[in-house]
Image (cartoon, rainbow, N blue to C red; front, side, top):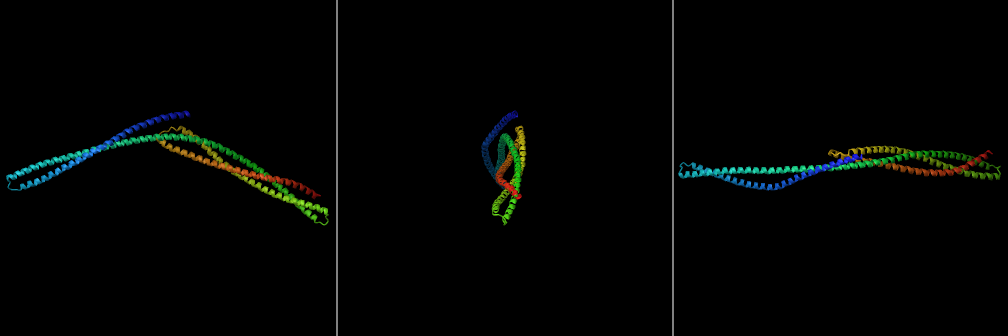
Length: 418
């Protein structure tokens, strides 16, 4: 595994060097195109000034020659009108003819001037169109150079972004692998903790069952003592009635009366003592029965917790297997370098990290609940133990009194038989 990772790292390093060289080459081309575009911009400022200056000269010349054409056209119109007026004269004298010849000469002269000026205006218009076309061609050349520069700069930016994204993807893959390893180890640790908690719960169930057996034995003993004490109490009450009857007779001697009176006082004290014993034992019986109820509730609660912890263990087992498979799959696919995989992988990595964090939070919540339940159970156990101690103390006190009652019972039965 380590040799394969080392080989992949070397291949990735070689590809990284190649990618960096390609990016540097694109940067150099981009710098050349940008420099060329800046030169074009600089020359374009001068070219624009020249074009504007030529255009203003052409406009002035066109206006000047247009004015001359208008003057020639006006002169031709005037001369033709004057020539027509001379032609209407019937008597053509030599002076009139000479003037007509001069007019015709002037007309020819102005017609030539008009043709020349019109030709000049046409040539100037052509020159203006040529200058405009050359200016527009230069603008288009600069635009083309600008487009090339923008394309080159965007290509460099895309290459840098791709390389950066690729590096980020590799870092995220490494981080994800580390997260998966730590998650795997954490899941294994929590699984062992959950198994210990499960064992503790199972042991608690056994302890509670033993407690129920002990408490029910105590309940049986208490009920037996109550029954025996009740029988003794009934015997004492009957004896009390008998003594009362004997004392009320007229034939009884004073010595017998004194003896019976003393015995009556003792019996009344024992009756009161037995009543107290029955009250105490009844309270002890209620406490023990309440203790049985509490322990049974604890058993039900712990059984629920055992069901929950089994689910936790199942989740953790699944988590351990998933993280193990994920670590193996990430180790074999960590050398993916295409842009599409980089983009998709980046989202996938982030998604897997978020899922891992959510699962860890859910497991933490389950463990917090389990720990809380364990604390509650231990608290109930301590309370039950204190109650059991109290009941045991009171039971031991009442046992001594019962022994004395049993002795008294035997004595009274002997007296009755006599």
